[in-house]
Image (cartoon, rainbow, N blue to C red):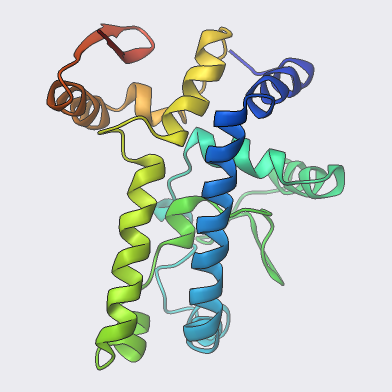
Length: 210
């Protein structure tokens, strides 16, 4: 089912009007700023050369990008009308070539990049920066550990809750992996079992209940 603009806006307002939900979103955006600061400080030069000049990196390859439904929702919340229309514009254009269609001359057109894109580092970049710097490697591993608290469904996570919000309103998307992916549903079921809950499967996925 296609999500209508008015319906989507109303659902987002419901989500943001919840103090607990707004706090989770704020925590996620804080995490994203921390990741952006880390990457821009330590990887900006090498990633610019590798991705935008020599183009030898796997970063931003069209077939290598996974976008979660929550990525779309968060980006919509943080985008103005001009930024959203820029995305629609490239979607309407010819989609040829091996690179992501959202990769513009000045970088990604998303205001908040998909999480998979933001957390990807090719081996060349990792080795160049972190191979002999254990402190930076530890900092990166800590960021990756924080990442899982938002999108890995062995516990209640923001990405799962955003999907559920739209599912409860009768809206679906093929990007709702936390409710459609067999592997992630198993992770969710094992997480519920570990917390003494049981899972209930349905067309929308797996839900926890006492």
